[in-house]
Image (cartoon, rainbow, N blue to C red):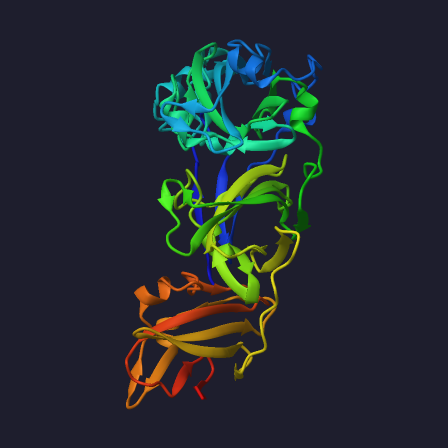
Length: 492
């Protein structure tokens, strides 16, 4: 697969920037490069010393208090304080998922960046027609030039890239419902505080486990230093250490990402969508931390779950993730500073009770346990066609179901470094008499084990799926159109 590069969040150098990001799409992984830290980052971050090592309050106590964590913290450019905090299961008609709760923060942001002196003529946009020697030609010196002080705007290009709630050692991103609260905003929008000493009050919303004990508000500022504000309990425990949180089911890593699974639950309804007959949503709770480096750059790793995260069930069947809650069409992300929480849903057969999670980051693939027992292995194929050095096509069997004829197939890539994108309607044809039939896309999607859409086969990973063909005739073979060859497999 090719790569695409685009630049986002780039602004002029006249304002204060906390990040300039370049997004690289590289074979299933998006790396968001964040600008180099300035010298300010080498100093201790203001506000990171625990101001209070109190024990946790009860849920009822936390929900009733309206002024938690009034301490503030700052770097050289911005002062950040939490004016109030509340924890609730219901927010503006939205109900938090089971075991989770909304944390609503009212925050105060103050631009404290010192004003800068700028030559008045440059500020007024006067043109220099002497190629830069005008002052010398007129006998002027630097003392003759007039300077004025100007404000430097504090700018966050995208709030969701830089503002997180740390809860018991895990970072949680801004929730989309931040738009609905008092003084809220779109998490994807920018924040601009134009003038020195100007104040912006913002409401922020996060979703965290209901039994969370330790909270801190984290601003990632790669130009002027990160800011961490205590909210509740111990700030040290809110921040955690460099290891995955306790109680993880399994953990692994690639060159660019450390990832761990924390559990799985099954629901009939997800985001208001019903799973449908014979299906259920498998909701995977995971955390990850970016290990990616781009020279001196620090990278946020982003992965499209609908193409590069999957679960495997008994027999080697693969199911890619649904679009993420509150992030339709957007990738999930993992920061380099702290393990970040993500929830990913998969639509699987309602009989599935053994699952493993697969993750592809660029061309590296890792698998992690989700249940105590691993899924049963893929069976031995009845027939195999080897398509050059590209792949093996596996035929496991067939069956008739009402007006459809069902093929049970699989793909095994022969390269450990390259994935494959398969077009099943064009590459697998059912031979019935004198006719060759293409798959019935609607009927195939309704099968217990439909082909993933898109059918992207990760490097070195075998994928099994079923295809439905609508016909009353008795098929005799399946014709395979590979990348290097064509073949026919009999259906005796």
